[in-house]
Length: 348
Image 1 (spheres, one colour):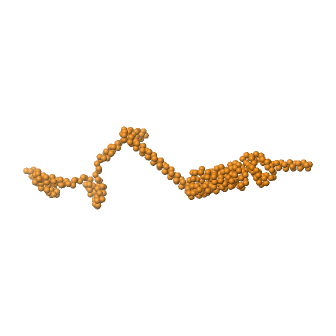
Image 2 (cartoon, rainbow, N blue to C red):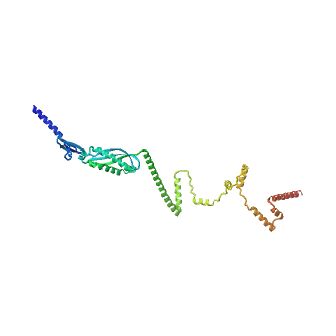
Image 3 (cartoon, rainbow, N blue to C red):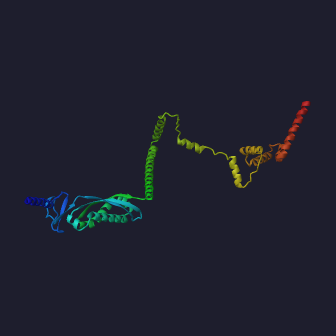
């Protein structure tokens, strides 16, 4: 009975020992064996492996690619713009022995190096580079992180900048800048279109100058286009040459009363204040054409010539020599004498 108990105890002890000595390593893992605290062999391959119980210790290392997000880092760019940048890093262990021996926690170490490298990239770059040249910055960031990670048995596969957070004021400024750029492009395009249209119109005018009938055909085509819309618009083509002819042969209008008043004011004559009736008479007198200034001189010369030739009667000569007021009085006296003679002849 005692022998059976001892046998059962030995079988149980053997099972426990066998269980502790047999280990299973997965395909994506490698096993690092510590024998009495010392790594004395290469990492164990995937599958079942045996170790010495209570002497050896097996530590498994994952060789899969690890995706680690980098917390958003706030920094000032080279052109003095405050930004917040976050990224993600992809890495894997290529040397399990270094990963467990040379560094205490390789994931924590890689994360800290990634944060400091990201801050350095922000300070060395400009805002435009962060927004447009992300591929180049990703490569530079990966090189900065991979340089110390090689000694830890870790390979940095790639680094990606996810987002660049800008202040609200900077966003508004960039929006205005983009709007101004779009406006500039639209104006340049419109001006270019106007230039091309003017060149085409110049070519069309030259073609129509050589063939005048083309202008008439174009005019008829325009009339057809206007008439096809069923509207009440009446189009009468009028040659431009006729308008120019009428403009060149139109006599100039006489100066108006306002122009005369303006010239009088400019000449320094002070306008008088008249009553409405006098103003009407003045306007009528201004509108009637005045006699030539030398009319009296012409009449005087004709009178002198008639005197010299003897064709004018003596009474008329005397009358022509009189002043205008006396001549009027003498004419009225002569007419009264003629009337008296006719009345006397009538009584007779």
